[in-house]
Image (cartoon, rainbow, N blue to C red; front, side, top):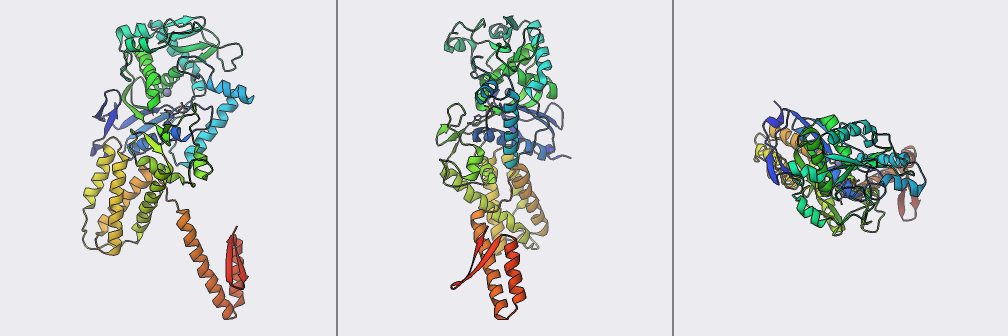
Length: 493
Ligand code: AMP
Ligand code: ZN
């Protein structure tokens, strides 16, 4: 019996606008696709927030006993500077500016992305496909869409015919937009585009002569459209229909809307049962975005080397901060918010660290089983991590009370409490038992003072072998003792 058989998970589905009971297509298995980064610059904390939210989703689904195939792609070609299929490819542009190969850009920022994810204790996805590794699949998909009459070729580029598609299918069902409104709201093309209508989007673009990233196709030497890449990769690894598709809220339109249209046009099926959108991270009240430059990079926040924040924060503190609000809420990154989360995180960890020193009694004065189910209920309610954290703080309170003797816990309940806390804190929220460096330094100073006193006692007893041993062995680990007229002090290298 797997845990998911006794828990009822509900997921907010952006397509229906409701929380729905989650039922996978194939019992016990889940296919989940999350749009990955476009690797043309360092990821900022906004990107990290979205991936962190889906890391928590992945962790919880696995914890429930599902066999999850989690596919998160790397966009390494085809993402143009604006959504109207105009402008330069983001990676090509960066390569031109830095005078390096586009694949050097891709390599550099893919490595950066992976390093950041490791720092934040992310689980790797099951498959991490790249767009450039799936050009053949994309060409096949375009051919099918053309054969089915939903795309047209002009001057070597292929466009999806949104108007034609809308005659038989509803374009805009995910973002709740109507084609008529889109027609009124889209600016007229400047005459440079070959598209029949401004709402159409590129499936294949003919490469300009100077464009380095190009592949042969039946239509031209060119490159695929960004929306098409995700359809090709999700279909290849998860099938024509799969369970969960995620991404940041800003991808709902046009990116995800186009993914639905492409799949319906090619396969006659809506690809995804549950669409999940993670909300945006703001920095001091404004959307964090590469384009506007209102960003802070993870390393700047971790090192404290930035103009926004008063100090450095540990990766787990940032994870905790993120989990303290729902993945569907806008989250504002502020110094006050981080300071409060840091305090809360270490308070929780202090309680977790007390668990092994608790003594069991013959009976429990607390209903641990009921408390445990409340934790699951929170996560079953569309991954409501802030409510889960409230229950973890409740546990922190009774851990302290058990320690002080005002509450009791039986041996069996103590085991259950430990297992549940470790599951939620480490496995599901992905937190690590980080030492609070502020109070850690105090404790270290205290410990060195104890050694200094022992050394003084040894010297008073003329046990110079011991006093030298204490001094030398401390020096070996980088702690230098200095004897002065006011006593012994120390420095740490
Ligand atoms: P990109 O590399 O721009 O394609 O973005 C990668 C992921 O980060 C996408 O899922 C975006 O929706 C997400 N993203 C971008 N900006 C933010 C933000 N400020 N807050 C949360 N997620 C974001
Ligand atoms: Zn995508």
